Amino acid sequence: MSTSRAWAACLLLCAAVPMAGFAQSPNARIPEVPDAGRSLREIESTQPEFAPLPDQAPLDDSAARPAPAPSGDPDGGARLHVRAFRLQGNLHVDTDALQAQLADLNGSEQDLAGLRAAADRITRYYHDQGYLLARAYLPPQEIRDGVVNIAVQEGVYDEIQLDNRSRVSDAVLRRGLSVLRPGDPVHIDNLESRLLRLSDLPGAAVQGTLRAGAHPGSSTLLVNAAPTPLVTGSIDADNFGGYYTGEYRLGGSLDVNSPLRLGDQLSLRLLTSDRKQRYYYAAYQAPVGPALTRLGLNVSNMRYALGRDFEILEAHGSARTTGIFMQQPLITGRHFRLEARLQYEDRQLRDDIDMFSQRHAKRIRLGTASLSANGEDSLFGGGRSAAYISYSHGSLRLETEAQRIRDRALNRSAGGFGKLNLTLLRLQHLYGPFTLYGQISAQRATKNLDSSEQFSLGGPYGVRAYANGSSSGDSGWQASLELRYVPMAGLQFAAFADAGRVQLSQRPWTDERNQRRLSAAGLSITQAGPSHQVMAAMAWPIQRENEQNGPKQEPRFWLRATRYF
Image (cartoon, rainbow, N blue to C red; front, top):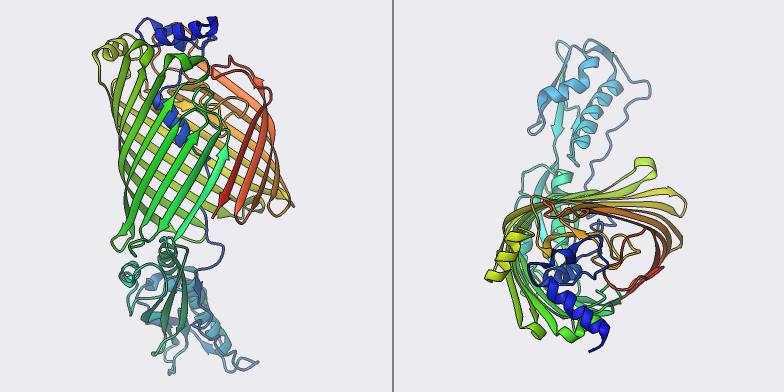
């Protein structure tokens, strides 16, 4: 056995027994030994992204908009004293709110043009409140005692028609439209929300058209549902893996859209590395109820084997996960979305070292409640923002007595735990082809965590001068700032700076330094088209720490290529 391999064997053996607390020391030049929990976390970590917003309005209302009121005589005609206005036909907007729009006209003298302008105020107020087709007008009347009648047509649905050529059944689409009923007023927020939620169903692209109805003041809603591809997916290759479990990875994703015509989706993911790491993932989800709440379940299986210096130890492990989730859109609009998600997962983690006949197993049950918000605005020239917040509560059970003894003496992570996670994103338009992108992520734990629940600074989505999974701890934050330049469609250059700090243990059990800071700067280039994307980045460390995930690389290169189909 070589000296380096013997030294590696000693280190890993020490990490497996209670006396090996020094193996996690932030000051030691000892490699952090990957386990099933950390390997799973590295695989399932993703780039924080903005949720897609529609690139066009889901509604064509041009044929149903009320015609403008006639302008009347140029000289306005005879004038009369207006003592008050009486409103008729307003069923969904409070009379006092409408009267407030006309308050300054009480006691004035108005001609016919002025009275029509008063009715137009009511029309504009309705439109501002979202009543798309509402119209106020002067009905035929004999004005007595200076009281002027203004009638309101609030613009209601006459009927709702469905032209469905999509992969989703009529029953599912009609269930999503069931809250829009004949006789109800046409409200733009409610209508667009329904159309957008239907368009979110896998297998359907939905567009609505409003046409004049059979009765005055009514409109017919025609909903057209076109098919989208049955199967979509991608193939990707990158060097985002761990040094000891395989840096170079090849993956594939496949989505089967509405296979049962329910607006459901089957998602599959396969990932393999150059050092025997394998990851399999499957999920199925379907909408239920008129609110189109999505219920789903997921399973995954990850296997790894340590290579390089640790290969002689025959160290390997697995992580099996089963979960259920519920996803509910709360606000769905063209420029803003808010969504809630509840999730429960059961994880079974195992780490074995065959050379020493060691078997370690643990089980984590975890429930998570989260909110995600995405929006676009015109602030300072326009931009996009996103926020993700979640709270997780779970329990860790160690399966062997040796693990429990070590945990009580050192980490004390067994039992119940909680953690709060927050991610904020902003993409700000600056000038011409320049934009500024900012991102900050943070985690706060209630106690010491298992490796699968910790927060890492390094990696392609963190401080990019350090390896994936570097500087993991129970609580911490990481931020990035990028100046982006897009000289032409599909090509982006960026200069970035990353920084972060992590608290290694929420409740430390040694006198060693319990914090680690990392920072870096670098450059990246991204080239994308309709069916592909290629990203390359290189980063240099600014604030240096001992590298514990393989040899140092200065600069560190990241490369990812994706082909969509």
